[in-house]
Length: 263
Image (tube, rainbow, N blue to C red; front, side, top):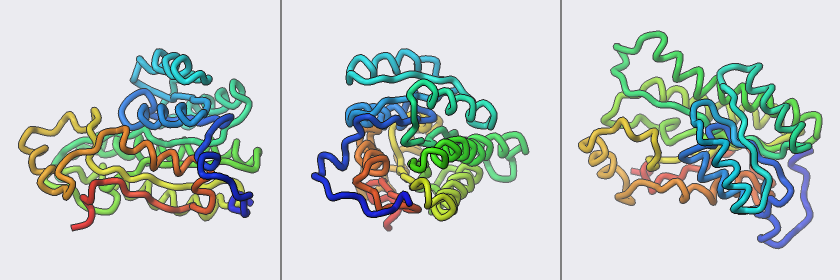
């Protein structure tokens, strides 16, 4: 059983990922890249999965050189089950194993709910929910054969509250689905892998570029910390989830939001 009691170890050992293979969707930029860097710093071998970020192969080479580890990039569309499954199988073939999958790819849009076209709504759900599931599902087949594995989802504070003043019902619904997906899979897959979520608050990445100065100002007024997160401030939470330091944690959701969800 994956949650069987491990041997006691020093904290540095618990957080060490040396020899582990980690695959990250949406790993070419933003939160995904910050987390890939954290995993490389902790000694892991890195597989960056990307769809549109054409700099990902170059980024993988830079990670490999900078941290003296093995890193490669793989192009795959998370909304295409056969494609993401083939990419993950290729990662296992190239690296010999897979220890952690981070389902991080996601998109957001701002529309009045009554104005969403079926295509616009479905695109958000396809990437954020279906893509997250297809990614985890493909990795789970590997984990079940190996007898071990670890799934980490990027959810959002939007999974548990309604952001204002923007109108993003599709994004909010999609992230709430990811959170429940993680909890359900944690129970179903407990014999061969752990499943957890990280829910970031407002983080300075490309996904925030649609916001006007007025909207950004309103967001800042809602955050007790009075600032947005930098992607690197999420590194510790994701490392904890991927490491043996969280060996008894499954089905959990770590909220990293500067107090945004508290008032």
